[in-house]
Length: 140
Image 1 (cartoon, rainbow, N blue to C red):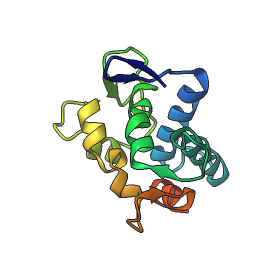
Image 2: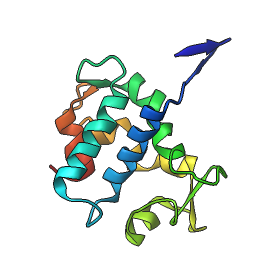
Image 3: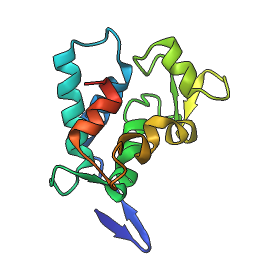
């Protein structure tokens, strides 16, 4: 991670983008992919979040990379996600689109359960294991 003054810059590599897309595919749930493929997607997303490779995601790791999951599918780069850019059910989309404007903003994503560290840290010990992560995303 590079620094610019007091700001840390994220380097978005193709591998990180692929993992972010995998993260969103996990959110898609029902019928998009077989269970095995959803599990692989969860593994790739978890590996991206786990910056130091210790098999645990800390709050800092989660906070620094969760926006990748939002920005990766934004094909038109308008900083919103439309239903065309996400492969999730209308019900799932509606639960993320809190203001009902037909698009998901970064704030809506970050404020949703999928953008909150606490949603994944089920044992409340300050780290997320892969089991906690996959249970929250895909109910394994």
